Image (cartoon, rainbow, N blue to C red; front, side, top):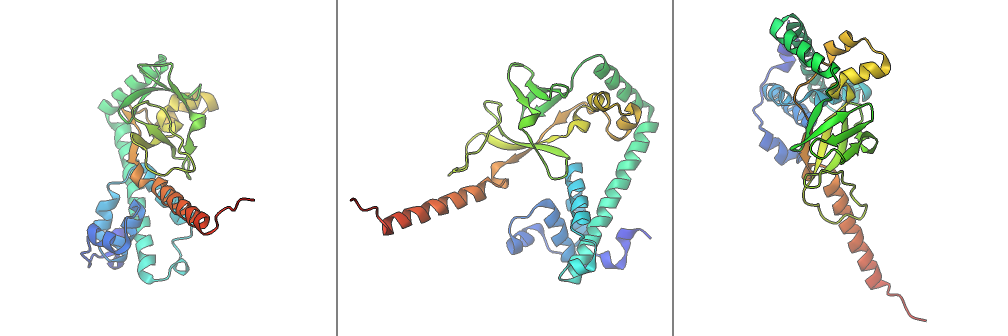
Length: 270
């Protein structure tokens, strides 16, 4: 039997995303899927997961494993346990679909020809390109740089990126006007304009050829899992969905507390 068709995973609820947000507030994608499942709307949970990218699927899978979320003892309710089990079923289905896509790609002569063309282009010395919030950058993994293609003297170092918890993506704040990284000050009081959060694929997806050369990996095996991508782009997230609003809220509160303290305890002259 298809695991997702088990009686425990039969949809009997009709709760909507809006209703969930009204109940629990804004949620991350994985939280939304789990809440759909907890409320027995497994169909909506499945549809919600279909909007995820591979990075989000990998994060959820790691969360289930590292946090022991597949054990009944890890949850306060049976519904929460079932929701996590259903999430694991969906992730397994995603992986099976991914492997099937690899098989089809490897057997499809048209896709194979395209892959060979991309490989020849890359091996001729042409470096990969990636879209960072609408601006084209050239990826030079050997030098650990991304150079703005039209203004190559402007570059971003990989050393200035943060890596996500699972090593799938590089993270940074990016100024869409100056095309430079942005470092928020600790005393930030309002969201800056023209700044977004970027999630940039890791080097295996950016340039598997360079990675294979650097580490002496089997190129054909690496390309089977990480084929050359012709149109690379970073995921763009608005600052409102980052951690900065919380930082600002805390800074405003701390400033108010400090001002109140100073009013109550004025510095007396000698």
